[in-house]
Length: 288
Image (cartoon, rainbow, N blue to C red; front, side):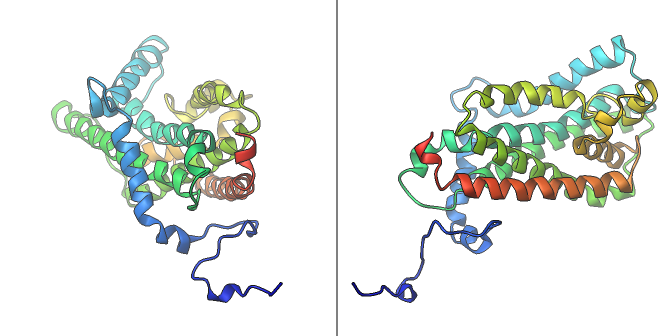
């Protein structure tokens, strides 16, 4: 049997991969497929629904209104000079981006098993398309936030202001997306073997929201519950949301330690997610 020379092939598909392999060149080669997946995610989510894309607007508004009634009116959580509704809307909008990225990517292998089993393409494209499509949804929700910001600032005269650090806001959004992508890829890989883990994701995400400073200032947790405030302070999501509100509303605190800690944890989880995802994609079709 003669030895086959692979140099004559234009592309070589092999199961042998590096431990950390995020092949940007290959992803760029399949960019058209990436855009098709993004279009699919945007168009099909609310297809054959009565309100359609309006759900992008209704969900954060009603959530922010519910938080305002329960946490600010009933529990009397003080948001300072910032209107409670606007305070909650900022937190909910940022949180929703992480929430949708995590829950959608956590079922990647199971949802796309039929496609993965028939044709080759970089599997990482699917979770990447989810992150990009959710970024478009986040942009719509951000426009709604800006509209209410203008209303409260010019009509109501609320004492709010945009901090000069707002130029770094895209970095905060990027960290939220990478964190959701990393955790989602880890969970998606585990779901291939442990199906019941999927049922715990939605429940776990709801619990995570309450320890991520979405509906209260981070300083309030330190003041009221100092003994267990470490649960929130060691949560990178809490620093992301707190920093985002500081940039958008000029309220809360800005911590360089919190930002550096969040960046380190985010990239650690993201790299771990890539490693586990790459290892799982080789054998998942036998267990799904």
